[in-house]
Image (cartoon, rainbow, N blue to C red; front, side, top):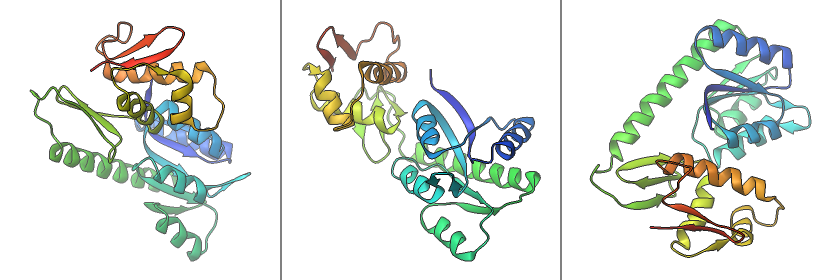
Length: 232
């Protein structure tokens, strides 16, 4: 089941990240930390996160590249936390999509205040967007919204992760017809090799978000030994 967190810290200084996460938890900011770019991407695939604290130097990775990639799929606030002090680093961080830049060593109380401000701003923005995009509750239409990576069904707007949306879009493009596993792997994951387990997990997540009873799906049905079908 997808978990929700207020903050994800991406920093290979483990002790500092752990201390910051524990401090935030004391103030009811649900926080987790990871130490690499790869772990960050995996975490975002599996969980919902409202804000990211991102270091620039990540061992064999760069926080700048992580920020760019996250911005391709997510609009959540990103605050850079780094020991790099130059104005050039700050300008780069803000120009590629960072919302703020905090230099190490940082004050936990000041960082917490910045996190709270950004979380509040993000929540207010989400409420505004939801109000502007409100759908008539009597509207039973099922449609995809690529701009927000969401699906509108039965008067609800349901936000999806990047891979979830790509998977649903593939099924939607072939709705009411069987889509084989091989076809889904090709259209959603490209040339990369993934096993059935990966596909099953993503199908399960979609059902949890779209179906009233994920164990007895009405929309996304399994065609045993072949693939899946989206019935509309």
